[in-house]
Length: 184
Length: 184
Picture 1 (cartoon, each protein chain N blue to C red):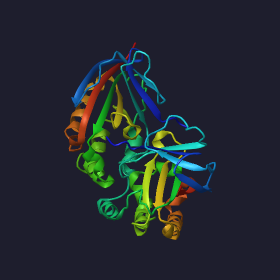
Picture 2: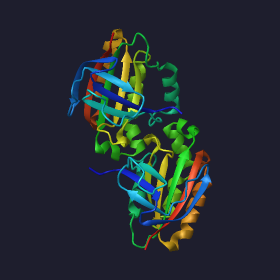
Picture 3: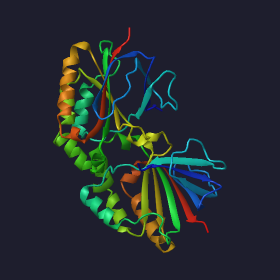
C-alpha cells in the first residue's frame, strides 16, 4: 500500500539547500540550511532540525472530471533532472474559509479565483505536489511543494503572483515561502 | 483552540458497555467489554484495550448551505440524559470511491443516495457525530458515533437499513457495527 505521509524537516541535512525563507502572511519559520523530505510521518524532530512540517497526499477536493483529465495529461512528475529549483509553501486558511460549505469553497476556489486554470497555464513547466495537514493537528493546512528548472523561475513568480491576487488568498492567514535548490 | 481529535478504545473500562459487535462488510473487530472515548489522539493502546480507533472532526465535505441550515436547526447534541443507547460504526470506502472527483462523490452521496435527506428524517431523535480518519493512516475512513433513547431504537434500525440500501453503500468495503448502552 502506498504511503501517503510526508515530513519536511528544516535542518542541517538534506539534498535541498535553502535559498530563502520569507514570511508572506503571519509568522514565518526559522531559516535552516537544508530541507530533507521523508516519505513518512516522523514522530520526533530529526537531529539538528529547527522545524518539521508533516502532511499527507489525499483525494481531490475541488477539481471536476474535465479539469482532472486536463491536469493528468500535462502534469510533470517530481524529480526531473533539470528541475533543480524548488519551493515549499505552507499555508493556513482562516476559520471563515473552513466554515464555508464545499460548494461555497469551490465557488471561491475556481469560479471566482481560477486556481486550477491558473495552475494549468504553468504546466508542464512547474511540477507540484499538495500535502494536506489541517486534520493532522499541524500548524498549517497545506504544504505545497513545487519543482522547476532555473529557466522557469520567472514563470514560477508569475504563477505565485497570480494566485496571491485572487479572492481565495484573502482567506489565507499564514503563508511562508521557502525557496530551495538541489545541492551538488 | 478546540481539540478535534478523538480516540475510541475498546477495552475493559469506560462508560459505554458493549452490547454487540457485528462485522457487516469485511473483517470485524474483537468484542470488548466497554468503550472509552478520549478527546485526544492517543499514541498507545490504553491498558486492557483490544483496539483503538482514532478520528478527527473536520469541515463539511458534502452538505450545501440549505442542507446545513436544516441540519443545524434540528441536530441534537450528544450527551442527552435519555440517550442511553449508542452505536459506533467504522466504515472504509473503496479505492474507486476515492478516485471519484468531489462532484462525482456528491452526486452518489446525495443526488443518488439521499444520505443527508435520509439522516434528516431521523432528527432530532438520533444524534450523530462524524470523525474522519482516512488521512490519519487508520484502518477505517470514517467513525460515526450515534446516540439515541431506547424508544428510538427501531427508528435507528430504519435509518441504517435505508443508508445500507443506497448506491453509496456499494462503495463500502469494510463496515463494523458496534452497539452500546450507557453503564449504570
